[in-house]
Length: 195
Image 1 (cartoon, rainbow, N blue to C red):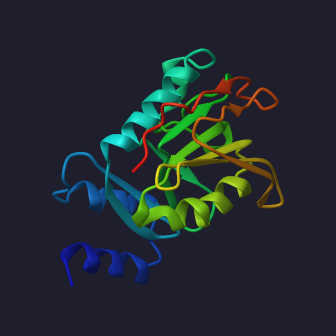
Image 2: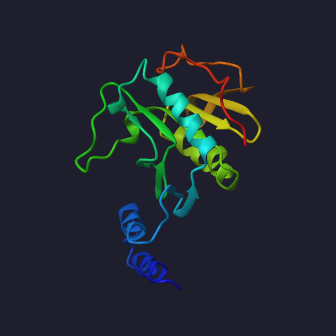
């Protein structure tokens, strides 16, 4: 066992295991630069960001500039979502206009109106599974999965009762029409790189 595992086990025994405890210990570890860290259902995931991954995020963020100020966008920033120990670092999240950070300077999941996750092979199961369920339970109105492995995007909307009730997907090159959502624009996907 590592020191981190020992401390986490002791915190679990005392009933003190929280996202803050987990992230506090992770921040003390020698984690390589450019590594994304998330806690999904109490499990810690670390993955390096690929260039193609970043290019997709940047392309979408540039297009969102027409609707969102930089101050209302977050990328790889911790947002605590409902459920058991869900501290996500969304690839890209857009906040509603009325949004304000909490007393600790963090975005509240209740203010997230758009999330983009770019699939990594090692963590794809999270994006299509527990993270999608959590975003639906949190009633995030628009969830976009971009999959450079298959060259497709998958749009999920109409969250209710912990599920998205509308899903549509198309290959890269087809626009993502978000005009009927809080995002209110069309995203171009033609130049999205593939893995």
